[in-house]
Image 1 (cartoon, rainbow, N blue to C red):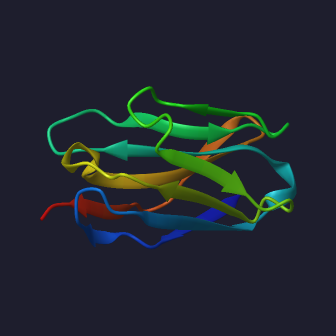
Image 2 (cartoon, helix red, strand yellow):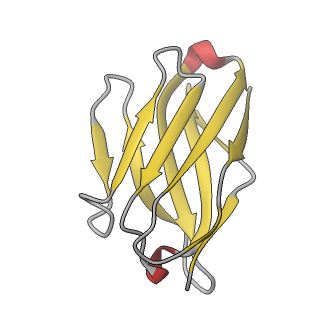
Length: 115
């Protein structure tokens, strides 16, 4: 079992930057992929970025070149650096990790991009 706690988030102006992080605890030795999803009001949850166990990354087309996912070597933390934020990035952002054949999720953190 893994527990995930996100931190960061809040209100940011268009064009601004923000970094959110997620702390993992519990049986972290079995964590493989780590990633971020988001869900905007009235929309389905969508993948934002993932960092695989080998360290390679994938991004949604909508955030490529603006967002960067990273993690520490111990896989206890995963980060999402978000630059050039747009109003359409407004959503609840969820941290997720792959753990053996399961996935665990954080509680989510709200990011609002608005002037």
